[in-house]
Image 1 (tube, rainbow, N blue to C red):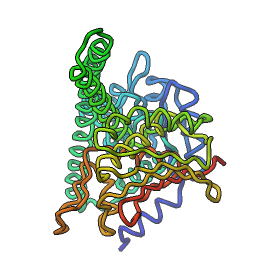
Image 2 (cartoon, rainbow, N blue to C red):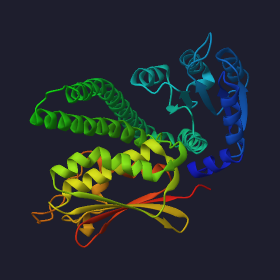
Image 3 (spheres, helix red, strand yellow):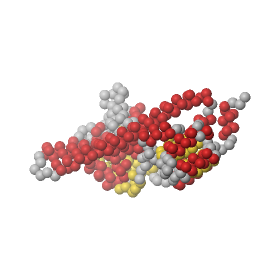
Image 4 (cartoon, rainbow, N blue to C red):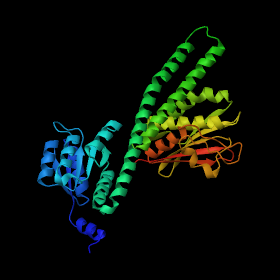
Length: 384
């Protein structure tokens, strides 16, 4: 009697045929090259009608289907494939630039098995196709378990898409009032005859508005980082100008805590994303000021290391226990439960953003014991 493993092995000896239906030639060619390199046979169609005709002529083992196409869109093509005798159980993977809950739900209703967001990464495309083909070959006894797993996967993806929508709404709706707060604070600072106390309050409003704006941007970029979409745009950066801007922005905050900011530049230029690096440095210096003792110094330094530039921020506060030095980069980390009343706590997404921004550059960020205090070391490798 032939076993399930034997049937799968026999089926795998014949190259599977993948039908790629997309009205964009570059997308078709990328999918073709990627899949043929893996040993698959690839059939191409440049629109929905051609894709449906190709499937009717020679049913494929898996269909990659673009959503937005003229005349006959991907959803309609999928529904018609499902109505064909050979199309009832063929895996259909939707490819779309529309990453939202409505598109995802429509894809499921049309009979789609999977959902990939453009631009599609070749490695992810191969894995999804391999998985779809293997699932099709599974023994019928596992169908119930497979249906449950698919339902759970779809539910998780839907929650992820809803989270992304909420994040986008929050960022959009919060940025405008924060900008208005900052603008009004600037107008107050230009008023002649304003009392010294009022001037200090307006300056503090500006400082907090800038901090809130950084938190909003951190939220957006952490969400991008989770999706693998945080891509640095490298340019030549003047580190002296950057550190001057960062310390200038945080000077009032440091003075209010009687903390001195000391900058020592061993390296003055680096190729990196200006916005991501500046905000990461601002988050690290602000974190150091918050934990620095009154009358102490926060040190900011750049160092040339083997094949990399290091940015170091050091304070002389309570430091971070060794067992918590990884956890401190987690979102909303509080690093509690150590039994130490002076344990340093994280706040919000600042350090999480720093880790994502640095790793997007191919670098690393670690926290070390400064004896006393904490030393955050950012390592940015040279471009290759």
